[in-house]
Length: 260
View 1 (cartoon, rainbow, N blue to C red):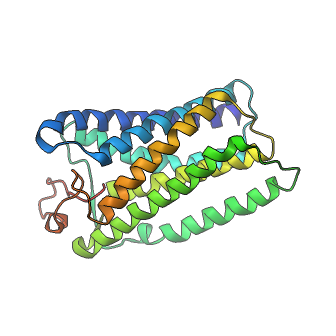
View 2: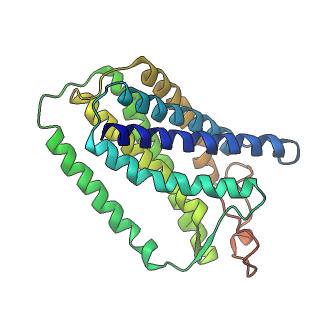
């Protein structure tokens, strides 16, 4: 259990750092022609704070922090979305499509809200059992609580954008959906960490505390960019005309989407 939780957390952290690096290179490449991207800059800031959070957590587990079963579940659920988005970014970086268009709403996608509800219910039920013992609420958990709220709000606006795009395209962007899944699942990881902190299983460490406080303004900046793009009040690389959302009949042509 210890090795698995530690390795998976470090894998998630590494994936976030890979994504952040690719976005940074893209931002540098396109700065002269497309200008500065608040969406890209905010994402870079989050990737380079959330990634180190998971790396530090994984290292502390290797050093003796007791692993939690809910921690393992949260990371297992969050890793596929992060890995999918990362692989698509790598593909785009190498000159490939960088996205996939899913026509209609296939069964596996239709089932996602139900699966998400089952997941949240299972976490809540397990959290109730874990929290039955003595609980304390140290002020050091504050940045994690703030990040839960910030990440859930970002995920909300990203997902709303995908639904808005669906009305025009009659389909879904895999890149957009995976990015929409990254933030709620990351919020759940922070919620599990907070639960174990208030029950005394996860103790304070200065590395995670500093990283999480840096993550708060980074998250607020990215939330501002995502919300502004959602309201169409910000011109950015990810703000494109609705006509461009219509899927191409040529399967070799990448589908462009907003906030994907």
